[in-house]
Length: 449
Ligand code: UGA
Image (cartoon, rainbow, N blue to C red):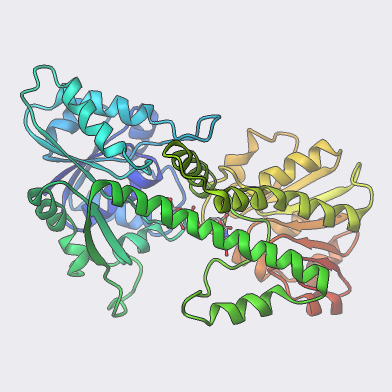
């Protein structure tokens, strides 16, 4: 099937590439011409595991193309996926101006009926507004547009695997024809008829998702409700960690046992510096804003957000306790990305940590396997090192901020030899406290004695 993807950010790139790899003909467009030129030259502007190979295959099979001419892309297909950004405004409300601009463009440029699919994360009721906007911007109202919501549940770092092996594919629609079209688009995924970039040989069984048909508002809400619930779970684990510290319990022991209860589940109970990224912090704010707009107080979500913001304070209490005076100290920050396996530093806790360290007069040396180039411009006063052992050279303390495997598996004996003081404040609970103690480290983490 012919498909158009508007917006070549992380969601658009993964969606376009995976749908092309699943056999569709995909035309992608973006208002940033540099990005389109990069993509045309075969370069991938973000670090995302397996995306390179998926795109290469799609290009080789002539299934994907890029253009900065939105009109050309809009006229190419009957189905258009909107994948533009919905950043937060100062009030926490989602800024939907990019969606509005795209609606105007589609209405102006389309010459025949289209199914317009929201993939961007949007507040509930956006679908209805989009439908109105498309009708209002259509020059003579002659062309009919159908709207659907098809939220993505892709995690950065594992997005390609998530796309090909979803837990669920949610389509919020108003008419049967749109259900049929969307089912056809996802048929290769549902029937596992694609070349899997993640699993060599056969994919494990039980990994194709359920196709759920809902109303548009439900689909929009499912996305916000899912992300917010996961954020709640993380903040819950973080409060448990704080209690553990006060009473001498161990958060890993507590959350491990909790997670064995299938009603709770083991994931997203990892205590530490809290959640960052361009999804949870903004989605939680947008959901709080939406619920207030419709007259529902979402206090538990407000509390989850507050707990998350306080993680940096909790971390700095440990840093201060361990280092005493921060001014003039050489400190290594291990990890810049908001989580492992991505180069994304948007709302990354590590950047808040760096901001505070610099503010208090520390000399910061930072390392990250992928995110250095994305951080350099914003923090030119930091020294950057590809090699973690170089970052650790002569430092008074190492601060672990991202859960990269390379930091989990660091040779701390070797690290200790180059550090001027064996002190680690671990914001992601990556190291074993006993082992660190045996190696002579003064070691601090969250919720573990
Ligand atoms: C999140 C959701 O997990 C996806 O399902 C969703 O599609 C995506 O947002 C989105 O809305 O586009 P993502 O932001 O890529 O995905 O990252 P997560 O893996 O959810 O992690 C978010 C943050 O929580 C990271 O900073 C991570 O370090 C932190 N985290 C995660 C914890 O602090 N503890 C945990 O136990 C788990």
